[in-house]
Structure formats: C-alpha cells, structure tokens
Image (cartoon, rainbow, N blue to C red):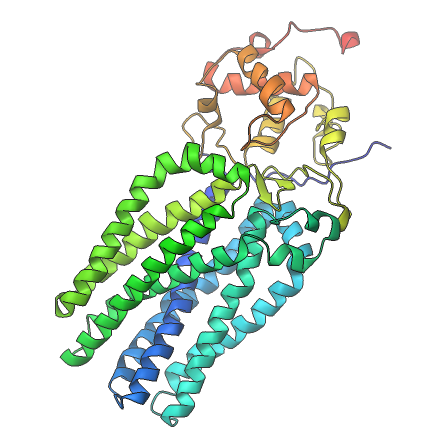
Length: 465
C-alpha cells in the first residue's frame, strides 16, 4: 500500500487568504490581551501608591478602568481567543498539532492562570470599598502576577513558532528545550514593553473623564511615565530580539520587512513618544478623542505591521523550522518521531499520496490538468498567497509578473522551488507532471488561454504517461 501524506483538506479563503483571517483575529486579540496584562500592573502600581500615600481617590480611576477592561479586554478577548483556535485549526492543522504536542501542559498551566486572572478582575472591581485596603491591594497584585504569568507561558509557544533556538530539541523533543530557547527572553521583553505602552494609551481614555483635577493630573502623568518606559524598554528589547532570529528571518527582515515597514514603524514610534511627552507636560489638555486616536495608531499602524512582520519573517515555516507554512514536514524530528514528507513527495507526488484528492485527479491527463494544477496550487501555496490576480495577500500571479507563459513559471518550479533555493519559500520537489499542472494553472490565472494551449508540453497519449 502506498504511503500517504498527513495533510488535511485545504481551507481556502478567496481574495484575502486564510492568513489574513488569522491575522485580523489575532491582532484584535493581542490588543485586548496585552492591554489587560499592562492594565493589571498599572492597577497594582497605582493602588500601591494610593495605600502608601493615603489617596483613596485614586481608586475611583482603577474602578472605572477595571469596568472598561471587563468589556474591552475580557469580552473581546473571550470572543477572539476561540476565534484564533478555530481559524488556526482549519488553516494550519499540522502547525497547531505540532504546538500542542510540544506544549500541551504549558498551555494547560496558562489556562489556570487565565482562570485566576478572570476571577481576579471581577473581584478587584467589585470589592473596591468593600474590603480593607491592604487586603484589596494583595488581590490586585495577585491579579497582576496571574496576568503576566499568562504572557510568560504563552511566549515560549510563540517563540517556538519562530524556531527552537538550537538543534538539541530535534533530538530530544523536550518541552524545556523548545520553550526556553534563544529567542524567548527577548521576545518576552518586547511583549512586556508593548503591554506597558498600550495600557498607558488605553488608560488615557478613562483618565480624560476624571472630574477631580488633581487625580486627573496625577493619573495622566503616571500613564505617560508607563508609556515612555514601555517605549524605551521596547526599543532595547527589539534590538536584542533581532539578534536572536534565525538566518532566514534576518534575510527577510533585511530584504523585505525592513524596506517595507522600517520607516513607517519609526514614524509610529515617534508619534507615540511625542504623545506621551505631551500628556506628561500638559496632562489637563488630554481629551478622550486624542487617547482613542493614539490607541488606534498603536493598534492599526503599530501592532498590525509588527504582528504581520513577525509572521512573515519566520517563513517558510509555521512552527519549529520543521513544519512548512503549507503544512508539509520539511525535516526529520527524531525526538518527536516525525519524518519529513519531502522524500515521499519527490518519489510519488502529492496527488497520489494526499488522502483528500478527488479520485479523478489522482492521475493527470490533458483533460484534467488545470483542475489538478488548481488543487496542487491551493494545497501548496494558498496558506501564504492569494490565488486571484487581485488578491490582498501576496497574489500568486504577481509573483510571476502576471505571466501567461507556463514554461517560464515551470522554470521557477523546476529550479528554485524544487531545490529549495529561496530562503522564505518551502522546498517543493514535485514530480514533472505535477510541476507542469501547477505551471499551467498559474498561467491560466493571468492568461485566459485554453487548457490545451496552457499545457507545458504537447498533449500525450494515455500510453505515454
């Protein structure tokens, strides 16, 4: 019996692609979750100040921000969290399976802390003024520690998606080798810095509504200091983070992400810096509209490009530098009993070994070549590329200059992709006929030629196949 690939049916989202679906949901979730973690430390620090300096009026701000947090972070976060799980499960089933097999107990522990965090924010808001101040302060610090613990436990998983950090993991398969890798602490520092900055920006939305002028000035300046500290820490941690990246990520940063987003993100950082300096200098001039605008600037023009860049620079992998973005396993992992898919693809192809291929496409003929090429293209390319010429996400026809010449496209499949010479593209050692079918289909996206004219070679008789 022929060996089979462990691939699942392809979830294809026209025009925007499945990656953008995951990215949009994930960005909203990161904005909500990081605001929550940053706000928890903001609460703990402000309440410590309120208890030490006997300023109970500061608790009014914590209560107001806490109620806002319940809606902004915990309701939105509770919706987008499962949304991430649903979308990544159908878009990247082998990727999420690889992460679960490495980090199931880490994830379980993170959920315990998240449970404590959710109970903590409800108790914190409800019990203000109902228990003595020191008891409430202990509760607030417990909430802060539990919130940050969720980040401490999630970052190892996110860092492993970039790479294990060392070759040892491939042999041991150890969770500790995967979790506390070269990239971990720098990544944690970047996210911790962001949580301070975003909590300071969102906090301004509530600070601007405080009626007590002294409280408003004190809180606004505290938020400014928190935001500035987050910016400074973020720049330092980012410089460290870049040094911990694998070679393929650095190449993508230097050739694609840097020229595309470098100046833009620099402008966003400058705008955020000026905002926090302004609110520290003129706290009473802060208005809700300005705080909302800065939150949107950080979310739309800071967080979205940053998250998209992080997702892009780990290409062609989706996890551990052994699972390609198109779900193929690129190397053996003895520590996990995982074997590479590439030898099987090279010897037998995808159509003969993929469980979910329609029977009529198992064998390529001149009549079904375009349909076979469509199946192969969507299976092997659609997780990173839009198939339509006007797709939002890296339109595949544009990669070939919208060429309708199959021979030119096949030359790329024969050379760079077959031999894995492009650092940010998966290696695809497909058999000759499958490369022909893909080239014909991709050419048809820009050409409008007939199926026979699109064939890379002249149609052959059944016996010649």
